[in-house]
Amino acid sequence: MSTAQVEIVPKLISVFEGEADVRGAEGGRGSGKTRSFAKMTAVRGYMYGMSGVRGIIVCGRQYMNSLDDSSLEEIKRAIEEEPFLSAYYEIGDKYVKSRDGRIEYAFVGLDRNVASVKSKGRILIFWIDEAEPVTDEAFTVVVPTLREEGEDWNAELWVTWNRKRKNAAVEKRFAQSKDLRIKIVKCNWRDNPMFPAKLERERQRDLIERPDQYEHVWEGDFVSVVEGAYFASHLTKAKAEGRIGRVAADPLMTLRAFVDIGGTGAKADNFVIWIAQFVGREIRVLDHYEAQGQPIGAHLAWMRQRDYTPGKAQFWLPHDGDTQEKVFDVSYKSALESTGYSVTVIPNQGKGAAAQRVEACRRLFPSIWFNETTTEPGREALGWYHEKRDQERGIGLGPNHDWASHSSDAFGLMCITYEPPGGVVKPIEYKRRYLA
Image 1 (cartoon, rainbow, N blue to C red):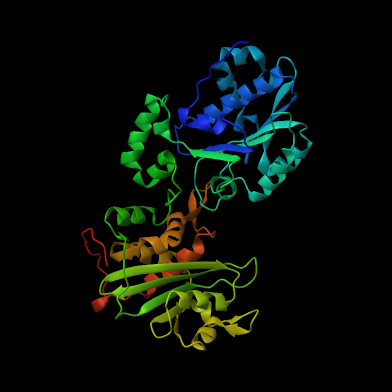
Image 2 (cartoon, one colour):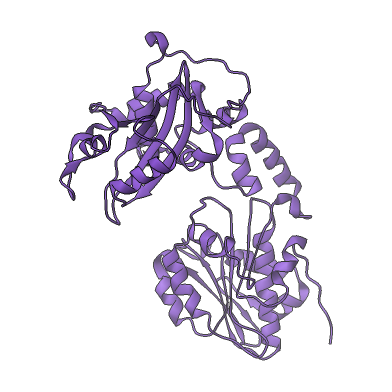
């Protein structure tokens, strides 16, 4: 009996050792995780086939319009790197299968063909590459199909992805799991001993020319700002200047709660509150709250828990804050006033209101300070908030209405409401410091 050695990223060795139901790796560009996982599917297929086991290795991605969008070429290159694998597998233009007929690869797109997974036969490994956008619904279909097992093995799910959103299904299901049979590691460019010189040049360029994207692309961090987002450069500059840190409330100043109204029910838009103080020419952003489908009592409970009581805090609502809520036949303004809060409703800004809010935010950003720990979810939304584009005509269609728009609208309400001492907004040059 001969022993073969294969070369993979050393940090991934522990992922493939021992028994597991799920194996995976997350991280940035150049980590070598995709090639390593591609190679290990072939190695495991070889081991299964040589022991007489027959089955399918499925390679899936969320979006796959054709084989050109699949992992087929990555599988081919990985096999060709190892002579014993090249001898075992037959590689065609559109297929990979073992020469003994026991192991076969299949490729699927989960957004369109997830139901077809159920008819794939005896699945030994299901590897999902670029798994970040895969929905929880897709995982709910895939996981039950992995029921095959033998004397010393069981069917496994493998996942590889670059981080983007904290609430992505792959993060919640696997990266955050404490189950010992779920083996996930974070792997980046510095973990790859075969990191190519060309990628190193690209990394250095991104570090200098695209610092707002660098941490996500190369270090595998979650996206904090989206390229082309309205406030991407402003958040990057705020961080560099130390305006994101420890910011304390002034006990003598009013706590201002700026709101974007959602509603009740599972499909309602999110209800958002930003807590801020206007201290001279500084806007101190102290806290952020967001909830979906909750009654007004839940929002008020959060205000009380944070000690933002009627004697200390006041509300600023958008123009629809004085409109009756469909379920309870009462406006948010009257409901909040009935609990003792002072409430101001900001009139509708009319056509172009969204653009006015964006411009007000951009103008005021040099004067804005964030308390880091309590505003992180809100800052993530600001970093994501971006323009919807008509790619064919090359024109902007205004802000994209998605999960980030509610926090961004409430933030914009704060900015159009701000009136500096003397009535003129002038950016201030700050030195790096913390407010305490």
